Figure 1 (cartoon, rainbow, N blue to C red):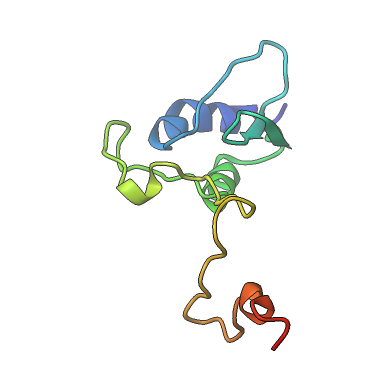
Figure 2: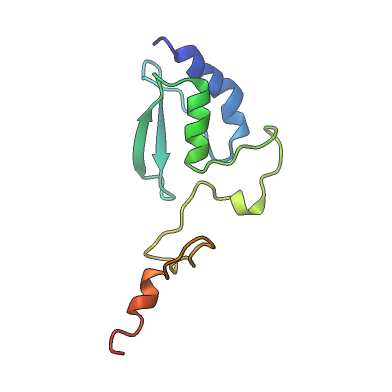
Length: 114
């Protein structure tokens, strides 16, 4: 693959900086990012062969992976489980953000009989 050196540079130089991101080498397989749930169930596969190192770094950060300053740098507490997202069926609905103008959905349905 023409950009595989880009992927290799990401694997060797960038992956050690990301918290909760690890490399599994599968001989002969095309490089891809495999996203897993907290139960290690596969959620999505994203092919990396045609991406530059910069594009892969941007993608990983957009997915919510925390990038450390150095491989052995501490990870702030709020990023310990990054990029995990809250489970909507188990956790209460998040409060609206400061720029949100609409109330959360559950607020409208709390008293349907009123």
